[in-house]
Length: 504
Image 1: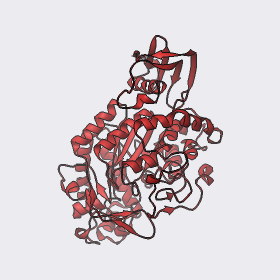
Image 2: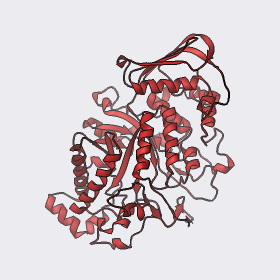
Image 3: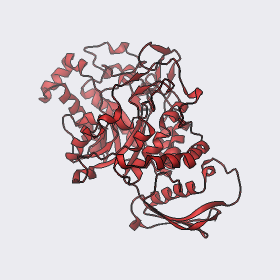
Image 4: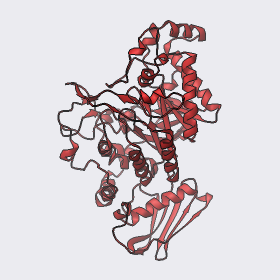
């Protein structure tokens, strides 16, 4: 049948025949959230969804049944197509099936983001997490703080790759989305049952904001007025000052964010916050004493809890990287686990909602194969098969009540060395297809999954669909010459990825 993601149940109704596009739809809540039943017969197609999203996902399955040309922007042939007559009953395994796109390190134009909404929807993925702010750029218009985009959205040059030799692209780089751009993206995604989750990173990864408004930084230990938007990669020591003025500033930012993004969750980052400046800052040390905190880690936790309460008071939920666990969280906060599985396990056992996205499994900026032809080799090797065998629920939680706290999973694509749409396509696909099946379908344990069948379905049907969609994926045999980046250095991690996946 060559469907991706693999449905839970397929029953053949006898042969195949012409389909002219006659589709009847209905909603029956008894079918279940996002679930659907699709019946294709000589009389046309009928889709009954548990809700509107279920009907939409059923349409995506029907689209696959009608052939690769259904994924083109306009029909290239007229008249009925031949489809199998089947009954398909299907529902997702997880409620959160996400993809994180880092538009802060390298800005992607609005149309590229809209295109990725379509690509997610075609694969029954329902969350687009936009990483909108970082040291290297601020990408969201905040009207009360115009310098965030006037200054913070632009950098003078960009480091190319990692490691040695150090190479630079001397062209300025930048861009940002107006609030109306983002409202358009949100509305376009909602029509396709995709939720857009914004990320405003704090208190680390904030040099672009400090370059725009130097008073946000630790002015008692560094000349923040001399800071510019960061041009290199890596963890940065320039972080926000732990002052009431900074809290009020970011409350103002988030007020405008909430007016654009109606979803339940707001991501506040919370990762990789260097404590070096706080240790040397009289202001930070005075705040630690005032609050009765143990150390600088407690100071970060205090800032995170502030925004946790602030968002909860407005009917929203904070979600952040697993560092936000350090110091304790309010009951409603959720955790996005990126450092192995340990943070996710701890959060789930403490009763928090968890989205699993371990870098050792589903960071799509990591290299796809061994070999010098891979463009800018970085991280661990995550092959298509590795991603297909990704299991969001760790063995320690499987079969326990805590497993229900794993609300889903997400594949993340950071863009330090991913400079444009073509590179995003190459890094994301086809691995994002494997991820989509892992989080939608009810698959066996990782080592028992039939990767050969998945690969057969890719080769016989789904690569043709990606071709029709215009996706510049990595071919099974390796990168095409124009997908390589010879001479741009990378940085590989030491151990093969799968040596410790089950250790947690």
